[in-house]
Amino acid sequence: MHWAKELQFGAKSRTLNYDVRALGRYGVLSINFVAAMDQLTPIQNDIPAVMAMPQFKTGFRYTDFVPGVDKVAAYRIGALVGGKVLAKTGLFVVLAALLKKFWIFVVLALGVLWTAIKRVFTGRTKSAGPPTVSD
Image (cartoon, rainbow, N blue to C red; front, side, top):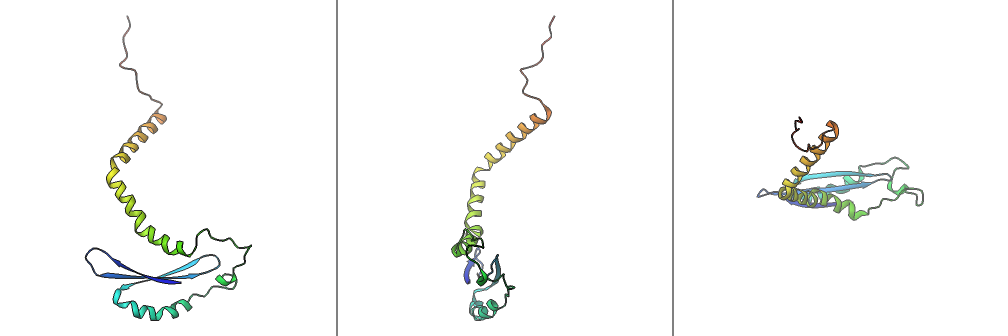
């Protein structure tokens, strides 16, 4: 299977990211073309030759799948396509935005954790106050 994505970073020109997946019995071979958008047609013309290149050994081909014997992946074709897009764009953007807004809480949590670890290793707890001298 194969698909193309058009990407644009800032004000720069658009970029073509053409993904090719060759499915095997135990995994997937990923091939990526990164080029300018005006190269889409030549790449599309070469896709049949590229798809014919991966050769899996007998028993390891996608067509050698044995129902009931082989383990079936919990994700489908959509997850192969959508999962990579989510990882590249959405998930990291959300995490970065949250870290930017709530970084102080991360620092405070690390400080509390450091204090707790220090107390465990030194055996010290908060003192009740300065020692008193008795007569």
